[in-house]
Length: 251
Image 1 (cartoon, rainbow, N blue to C red):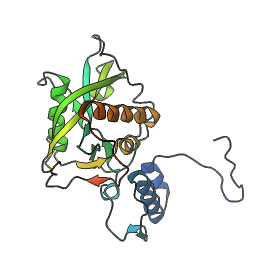
Image 2 (tube, helix red, strand yellow; image 1 turned 90 degrees about the horizontal axis):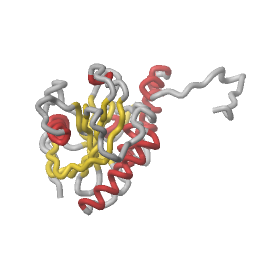
Image 3 (cartoon, rainbow, N blue to C red; image 1 turned 45 degrees about the horizontal axis):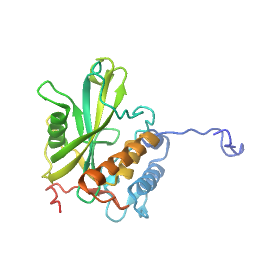
Image 4 (cartoon, one colour; image 1 turned 120 degrees about the vertical axis):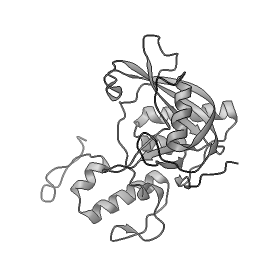
């Protein structure tokens, strides 16, 4: 940033902003152009064809659901590969859920400031016997996924547990699992509405999650695990695809 030099006759200041904040500072048409260009890069689409800031052809999935990236490269790191210490309760379980072609599913919860993507998973409930049970339940509720053979990749430390009511230090488990079926979209019982379901490469998922280099390393670890454990291929770069409302047959 120290190398940035502004032409004084044109610009007085600059700032680095998340897209949700940047769009508030731009004219509406400029904001839509910025978002379309940013999402085209994330979604691996070559171009975005716009007129007055609006798509003139099919609207890509990221634009259709107003998906944004919450940049948080330090929030999720580091990933600890060993067992979770007994002193730390496991409060959440999230997984890289793999389709047979090596791509993974992200879910996005629409909100007033746009949808933020996340891995399938969620908070451990008292009715869950294991964190793996949490994963199966949450993946079915949020994304209508049936999973098999979940394997633990590691865990990340949540020092405060604020998101879980201030429970104190706890572990957030990271897993990988195979998807065996994707059924029709359904209402999530916790939110009262369905989630968008996005099919992406692991690298695209890491970028959409906004975890920075730690997220890229975690995505690579998950892909290596899927390849070694289940013989799944390395996903080729492709445009991000939305799972149809009626579900998808896996081959």
